[in-house]
Length: 185
Image: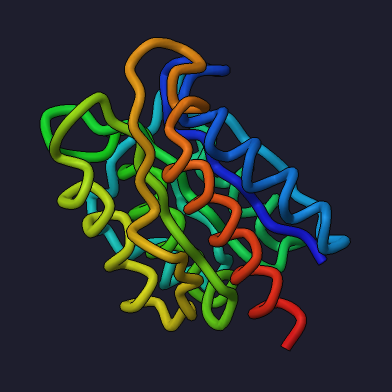
């Protein structure tokens, strides 16, 4: 079994990476592999709702000028998805959100039925709104949501600071435990 972890932070090894790495380590204790894809510094086009992907039935977006189709291809060999994003102005990073919207719209059959979760990292506020924004599309796409002991949020501003958020790191480990349980059912 394998979980695709998406790092939507522009900081490749910042706090979102740290939270996702905690999840990856915990998944490994259950014998579950993970693959981390960093998209936070990539150009990601927004969906224009042209519907061409659905007409072609290809599970790919017709625009092939960014990372979206390669992430969809990666997901084809994965059993679950976790998207992590920093919080900017009370919202997930634009790269994470654009990628999520495009790939779920273009390739819903690739994602449907696979467990999913989102996590957000922030300095102080806006995390619950950003977290909710990332979680809702999973329900719309028939993806069971892996929960944790609380909302999947961790706090920290400077790189590595999120590792000091003991409750946040525990939340990430419990999320990984629950994802493992879902996958093994």
